[in-house]
Length: 252
Image 1 (cartoon, rainbow, N blue to C red):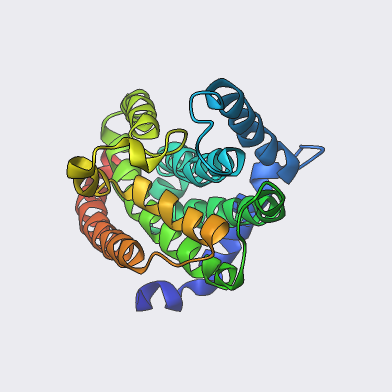
Image 2 (image 1 turned 135 degrees about the vertical axis):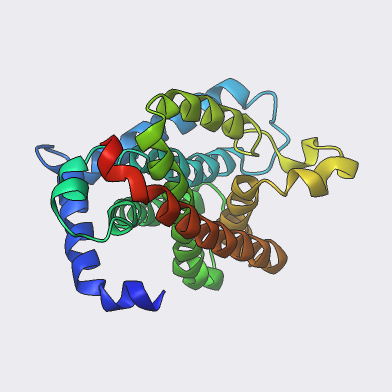
């Protein structure tokens, strides 16, 4: 971590560039990134509202789930291409290669945080219990960024050697979507399997966000679990990336 702090000026510059590039040439900027998840949440709500009519504040429930999952889906789908897509920086400069997936993750993390802030008043209007625990939201999102960064270290380095990884990852993210409580309530999972089900980090982080935005509570046990998973994943991702990057120049 101290190594990243020493390079913070470079990281900030790269992150700002990535953030601006994402919305470059678009007339509505951030609104476009809000439109897709809003429409998906609306479709899911209309399709499943009768099936789960007994779920309290179901519209807000789906909205939070979709927006939280979206960061994972979009940031990893883009993040895996950071080395392949910037091969000129990898082969022709001495830039620390880890900074490429880091900058992409941070830029999408900033965008995701703004998106979630936008839906906070909407969730409140839809019946969510937004209270003082909202102050804890930046901490949770920062940990979520660490988790995504760890994943992107694995994905971006593997993508150099296995170019069809994006198709495989698309299938995996679809499986994770249905294996997480985005549309259906957690109570649908049999209690005997629920503890195992919550080992899914995405299911865990979705419930953490819902705890803050809908119930005004911090799910401390789930947060500690997710924090440990995020730190372990990032540490393992760094080791894996540094080993794999030795042959980036040859393959690219």
